[in-house]
Amino acid sequence: MRTFLSSSVYTVQVLKRFSLACLAGLAFVGCSRDVDSIAPQIVIVKPRDGKVTQTEKLEVEGYAWDDAGVLKVVVNGERDLMVDPKFKDQRGRKLVKFSFIATSLSSQKAAYEVRAVDIHGHSSTTEINITRDTKKPSINVENLDSLASTVAVTGSIEDNMQVKKVLVNGEALNIAPSIKVPFYAVVNRNRRGIILIEAFDAVGNKSSRTVYMPAPPAPPPIVVTTQNQDGTGVNNSTGTSTTTTTTRRRRRRVRAATTTTQQSASTPAPVVVPTSPR
Image 1 (cartoon, rainbow, N blue to C red):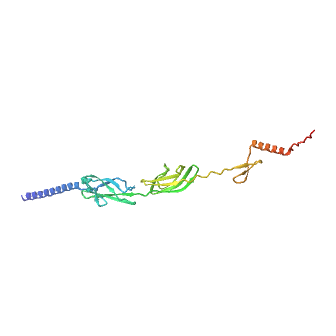
Image 2 (spheres, rainbow, N blue to C red):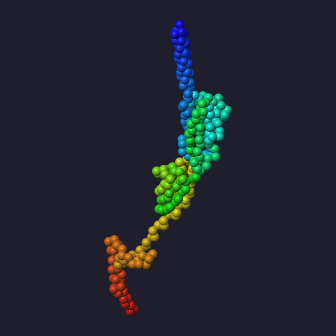
Image 3 (cartoon, rainbow, N blue to C red):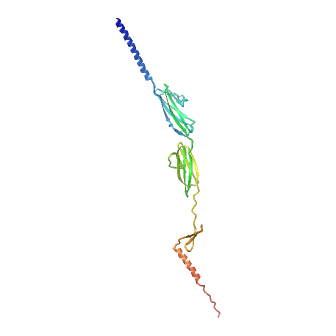
């Protein structure tokens, strides 16, 4: 009897221990399902990282995703975008959209940090860099070659970021975009007598320069030659003797005139003898 009772008590104790172990195991399994080890994911839709703009304000757009739910989206550790009336209804959702205005952009790179926090406190961050560029390209004219009906212009254009396009009197030049771009163009003379050079950088900053066309080169001097009878001539502009070629007909005329003159000089004039009256 005593043996039976002791064995029964032992069995009950074993069952209790087994039951407690099962309950602990079930509780562990149930808790393991609620464990969140995944940090939120952040995607910036626009602008791209390293964006260069000429405006002072630029809108940044993106979204954050988390399997448990997104609680906050904080910019530069100060501003929670989920407080904004546009986004407060999204708080706690698995996918939330956000946007903010990047203001007071300087000529240097401005970095904006975006941090997303889920409902369990896990967080992740991403950074986007934006640069404001307001500097215009500089135009340097190096040489003007004046011709009778055209003018050739040579120079170079520089920009702190990139020279994108060059126009000379409205005609686009074929260039390779770069920080410094050499250019050469031949333009026709116009009534205004000017050459307009326009340069654009990669973000649209524009500069222009007007150059006045030089006067066309003077025409060569006109040489006037006086023909002598012996076939030589005298340059009236310089006073030097020149030898010119005369045509056969001209030489005949000169020879005939010379012969006539010589005959007139050698033939004596006729003598008139007076007659006596009868």
